[in-house]
Image 1 (cartoon, one colour):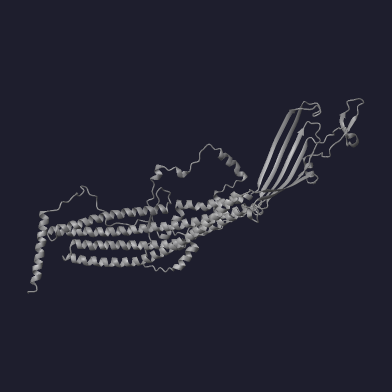
Image 2: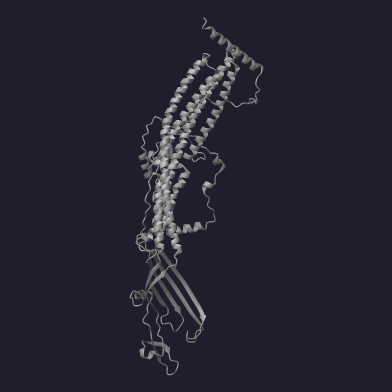
Amino acid sequence: MSSKKPVFFAILFFSLLLGVSRGIAQNNPLAVTGSLPKTPLPPPATTGPIELQSVPVPQQNPPLTSVPPNEANQFEHHSNILNWPRIFVHQWSPTQDISPDTVISERYMRSEDPNARGLTLKETIYIALRNNPSLKATELDPVASMETVREANGTFDPNLTAQGDVEKSVVPVTSVFQTGGSTAFQQKFYDWNFAINKVSAITNGTYGITFDNDRALSNSIFTGVNPSYTPNLALSLSQPLLQNFGWKFATINVQIAESGQKQAQWNYGQTLQDFVQRVGGDYWNVVLGEEQLQVARAALRFNLDLVRQNDISVKVGTLAPIDLQEAQSAAATSEANVYTAEANLKNFRTQLRQDVMLNPYNTFLPEEIQPLTRPNPNEKILVDEEHALELAVQYRPSLGGLREAIRDALLQVKFSENQVLPQLNLGAQFGLTSVAGTTPCLVSSFSSTSSNCTSSLVNPAPPPVLLKGNKLPFGGVYGDSLNRLFGFSFYNYAAVLTFQMPLDNAVQRAALAQAKVLYEQQRMFYRAALSQAVVDVQSALANLYADEKRAQATAQATYYARQSLHDEQVRFRVGMATTHDLLQFQQEEVSAEGNEVQADVDLENAKLALGHADGTLLQAFNINWEVLNPHEVPWYAAF
C-alpha cells in the first residue's frame, strides 16, 4: 500500500496541473489572426477513378527508325521532259501557295479527342516514335544530307549545251568589185551548235566535245563557196597534273558529303535515344502522379475520419477542443496536398499526351494515355561496369558521330594538303573541219593557165567570148560537208601546258593549318566525350544500385510505418495516445509511402538512364536502328 501512494499522488498532481492549464487557456485565449473563408471550396474527392476509362490498342510493332538513302526520293522532282509544261505553268501561276498547317481555324483549335488509350511503356514509345512531329522533323536531317551527297556526285553529271541562231547584216559596199554592181553588201548566217562537257570521276580532268555548224550566204562575187556549210568537230581535254590530281581524288568531296550524311544519321540516333528516355520519363511521371494522388487521398480520408471521431469526443466531453482543431488543421493540409497532387497528375498527363501525339482522328488535342506498366522494384539487375563501358563505346550514337567527324576532318586535311601543290594543267585539243556548198566559177587574171571551169559571164569587149576561171572542189550539200569532215583532210590541234603558283602560297597553307587544327579539335572532342561517357555510365550504375537499395529500404520503412500507425491507433482508441501523437505517426506513414513511390519510379528512370548512358536504350525496346551506308555511284560518276 505504501508503494502505491507516490504513484497516486503523482497522477493527482498531473491531473490538477492539466486542469489548471486548461482553465488558464480558456480564461486567457491566444490572439488568432485570420479567418476561415465565408464560402470555402468543396473538399476534394477522397475516392474515385484515378485511372482513365481507356480503350485498348492493337498490338504495336517496332517502328522503322533507320533512314535509308532512298528516303530522299520522295522529295526529288524527277524533272523529265513531260514535267516541264507543268513546272512552267506552276512557276507563273498567280495564286500563292499556303501550307495547310499555317491555317488553323478556331473550330479546329477547340477540337479534342475524349478517348484514352491504355498503353504499356513499350507501346507508348512505339506510337510516340511514329507520331511526334519534333522527332519527324529531326528525321529529315539525314534525308537532307543525302541530297548533299547527290549534289556532290552531280559534279560529274555531263553538261549538254545547244545553240541555234540566225544573223543577217546589210551594209554599204566599200568597193565596186565587191558585189558586182550592187550598193549593199548582204550576209546571212545560220548556226546550230552542240557541246557536251564532263568532269572525270577518275582523273578530275574535264573532257569536251563540240560540234558547231554554220551556213553562210552573201552576195559577194569573191566568195568561193556560196552558200556554204561549214561543220567543225573538236575534242578537248583539260587535265590537272599536280593540284586537284590523284587517283579517285575527284570524288573526295563526295566522300566528305557521305561522311557528313553519316554524322547526320548518328545525330539522329542520339536524338532517338534522348526522345525514348524523355517519353519513358513522362510515362513514369504519370505513374508517380497517380500513386502520389492515391497517397494524398488516403491521408485525407484518414484525417477526415479523425476529425469525425474527435468531433464526437468533444461533444460528449471526453476530448479537449484543441484535439479537434489539430485534426481539422491536418485535414485542411491534406486537402491542399490532394489539390497539388491532382494538378501534378494533370500536368504529367498533358506532357505525356503531347509527346506521344496519339491522334487517330486528327483533332487539335490528341488522346490521353493511361499507363498500364507499373514499377517492378523486385526485378533483378545484373550489370557489369566494364561491360557497360564497352557497350557505350560501341553503341553510343554521340561517340559514333564524333568518330565519323574525325574521319571527315582527315578527308579535309587530305584535300587541303593537295591544294598546297602548284597548278600544273595540261590542255589538249583536236579538231576537224570541212566545207560544202555552191561553188561558182571565179574569173581571175591567173586563171588562163590553171583554169578548171568556164565562166558564164560574157566578155564586154568585142569580140564576145566566154572567160575561163577557177572553181573550188567543195560543191555539194550539208551531207557532203559531213562526209568530208571525217576524211581528216582538214584538221587542227593544240597542246598547252600551264603553271601557276602564288609565291608565298599563304592562302593554301593557312587552309591546311585550319584543317589540321580542326582534326585535333575533333580528336580532343572525342576524348572528352569518352570521358563523359565513363562518367555517365558510372553515375547511371551508381544511381541504379542506390535506387534499387532505396526501393527496398523505403518498402521496409513503409511497412514499419504502417505497423506503428496501427499500434498508435489502438493506443489512441483506449486513451493512451493524443491526437498530436497519432498525427505524427500518420505523417510518418504518409511520408514513407511517398518515399516508396518516388523510389520505385526513380528506379525505373535509373534503368532508362543506364540504357541511355551505354547506348542500348533502343535495343532494350527492340527498336532497330543502324547507320546505313549512303554511298551511291550514278552512271555518270563511274568514269
